[in-house]
Image 1 (tube, rainbow, N blue to C red):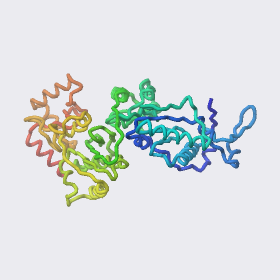
Image 2: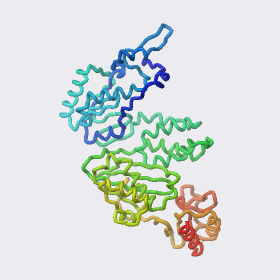
Image 3: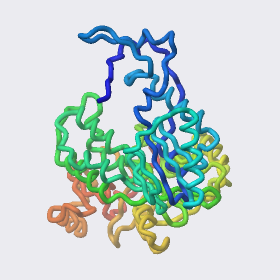
Image 4: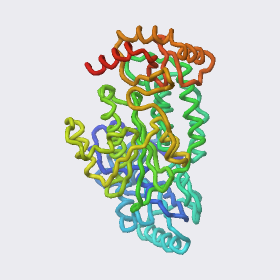
Length: 454
């Protein structure tokens, strides 16, 4: 039994210790190349740290048997995790990121082979003996080929989700209020690096967290909820990146969000995706595609800084970004950031499928999809990516209804819910969220005129 006292009032007046706790991703990245592991768990770790004599009275608590004080650090104090993390970092400092990873009271010893591991394990155990820190033998594991650590399973082949840890997610009942939605997304979000497009999949649920939005669990929310649970059980094995080898980034942008995947030697290291901020929805296509690259460089800076990086985008003009003269202030600011990296930007057609194609290790050629603004879908139909003015919506809708091919596509929507063609709230036909415009020269001229004037 672990005694935990309500120290909320004491915590309110405590000066917070700003000692940083390590990021889980950073700790896992240190394990690249390791094939032998041992996990050591300290016995009631906090109780092995003495409280300063002058602070002992502050830990006093009341029971029906009288008042008591802690001589060792109790659970529930706001600074307990950071103080203990500081202790562990100080005693293991010579070996951190060499063959020891520490997160509060969890110690992982990792090595490339069994010979090295024997020596590494001996050094770690000797330090614990010298510092009089005690472990709980029943929770320790030695000489493992794969190990469960911080909710992940680590082995020589890479990192994957710990199925035992996500059982709580898989058994989760559909949320009944905003609090339960927030709890589910918080738990599932811990493994977001394993799920391609996590943010976009979770969008229907995250909308429920916004202020002044009435909680209404729709079919769309249920679909999002079920998809996240499914994808977590089918999550890919991610590899740890290796310094000195070239990184490859595939970036993509749309009116829904920014997405990118980081790879090395044809294997996935991580993916990231976020929704557009309100002001970003007004960016021209060129800036939106560049924003996706900047997003990737910022979120993976700890991987990419000082390393060779090859970036693929489906926006051809970005290939010549470094030599362009006429740049707006936003582009100039981003260009300064790009100059910090050793990168090459290349054009790769296939906006809709490039990330999925890369993930499945297929060829990087023969992907034909829509172009930047207006793309020929067939001999008679265009797909508009431009934002149509509200006044043009009725004209586009009426033109769709007298176009033979689009009439057939509208009928297809009714019989096939999985079709990439859908009817929106304005009764307009869309292809992947973009308006379908018949080859009507007068209407096309009007759309282009409105777009240029705006």
